[in-house]
Image (cartoon, rainbow, N blue to C red; front, top):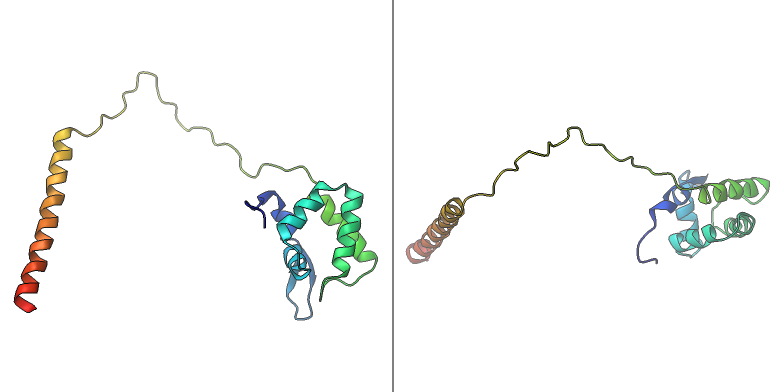
Length: 144
């Protein structure tokens, strides 16, 4: 399997291509997995081929899928449609978000907490930890 799964192949891999004998949707991902190949590797290799070569390879692959689409002219048109989807130029799914308000150049950022506040917080944690230890020691001595 590829080190990082390519999300640009998701539209191709999750396209429903047929219904199996139980009425479940058969996607390209499941068809490739049923064929015994890694779906992401196979999709990446199909994307690297020319449209004609990829279509021919996909027709041959779909013909051998157990409980897959029935062979014929529909398989060839399905393969051509899938390859066109695979070779489509990627479109960005997310658009950049512009900041809603601009920060003025003379804006002062909040100062970090004072060392006195950090020291007080640290002592509070020590106090809580010590109290817990004392309660546990008391329970061990009295109950145990």
